Length: 302
Image 1 (tube, rainbow, N blue to C red):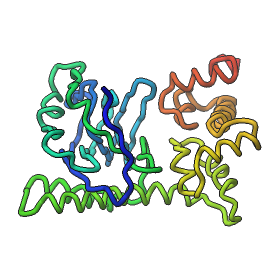
Image 2 (cartoon, rainbow, N blue to C red):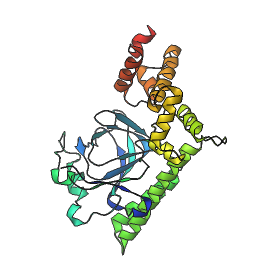
Image 3 (cartoon, rainbow, N blue to C red):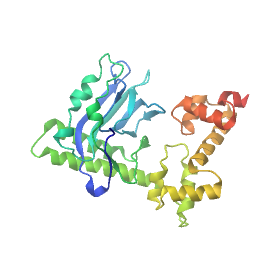
């Protein structure tokens, strides 16, 4: 039986925070999070250093001044790369409170499993059936550089203080600051997309221009099209009629063409080039490159 999935509009959001924590000077030696599945959303903001978040088909390197949001029921593995450190905030939350029937202790389910000799946390089948709520038309970022670090740290410090002190009516304060955090994230998504917008009034060309300017970032076409006033299905249809390829194919071609230019320069490693053109996973980049060009990146130049 699959979890019930429902779309939420902004009027329905009433966030519930389950865990708020700041981790200082985490390294590969003192910070172990086993491979696991979470049952709510996890917001991560890296203040300093770097962390690696590995999924089945992708690896994200989250650097300083970047955020990452992990959705429920997706297995992942968080590590701090060797010789690096990481200072970061983490918030576990739901978009609405599901009631005690679907509630659980984050200390018991998550934190008690960290920093112990455990490679993989067994899946809790009951928690896996919790309702799944997602935002209408907006996908929260897998990886995004933020604009205002002070705004984020101020909100996050307040959330942690509220959850530590638990003063009178702290639950209301908790919802208030979590709403501020979500608004900050949504504003950053919108600004990031609209900053590259032209003034010619042609939304279709605006989206195409945005893809070309931001090819080396994590792009979500549904979110981009929504902010520009398009549905992705219509944009995809018209784009393919005009360009002869889908937006995803167009993006991949831009990335591979740019990678070839960097390969010819001879200044960078394959791993560095993969990161420079928008791929956090070097192996995945090599597979895409070989699929497009018939050779691995290293053999292509030869």
